[in-house]
Amino acid sequence: MSCSSCCGIERQFNRKVAAGDLRRYRKRGPMRTAQMLVDALRAEGVEGLTLLDIGGGVGALQHELLKAGMECVTGVDASAAYLEAAAEEAGRQGHTDRVRHRHGDFVAVAAEVAPADVVTLDRVICCYSDMEALVALSAERAQRLYGVVYPRRTWWTRLSFVLLNFIHCLRRSPFRAFLHRPDAVEALIREKGLTRRFYATTLVWQVVVYGR
Ligand SMILES: C[S@@+](CC[C@H](N)C(=O)[O-])C[C@H]1O[C@@H](n2cnc3c(N)ncnc32)[C@H](O)[C@@H]1O
Image 1 (cartoon, protein in one colour):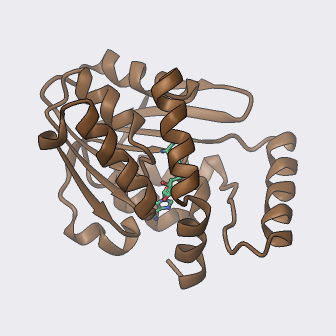
Image 2 (cartoon, rainbow, N blue to C red; image 1 turned 90 degrees about the vertical axis):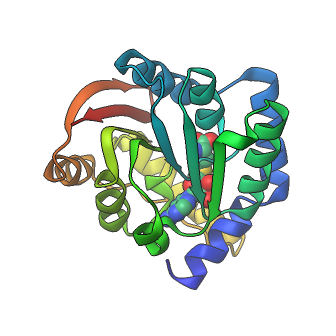
């Protein structure tokens, strides 16, 4: 990750944002698409499995999947503020001993991150410019299931990403959102030996689970 991207992520997902997201999660539970991903993974059977959650934010997926019986979680996130919030929530929910966190750009640290039964990226691919590296390195670490939530490429998502990036530009924020081509994402995942098991969409997002 270039310095401007990593500073952009730290600035975008700062303490204030993390505190707000944590409050929201405690009040209302996971976002709709995160819940869809949790349900699709649970339907595959996750009890006793290990999870690698990349860019997990306040850890909604991690907490929900641990409650569903997953054995342990490794969370890798480029935002220190989010990792602090995820650790605080893990403590509150009483599963600190089953969670390990690592701060950093997953692409940069991937060689030191062990494979897991299940790998998830919930709304992460669109925060990262080098989609090819992020998807390839994460997919090859998925021993059984690979779950992703990322934006559809429609006229309205294209327009909103242009507007979003324009706002970041006006605010002089180095953070940018990326609307990667779904066919390119899909092709990379298939190349890593994974096939689709679940697919659902909302207006903006697609929720996909692949299996080996
Ligand atoms: C939009 S937030 C999503 C957070 C959470 N998954 C959710 O859906 O609420 C994007 C997350 O991806 C993380 N992220 C983006 N690129 C990353 C990378 N290359 N390595 C690790 N984390 C990354 C950010 O730090 C942030 O936590």
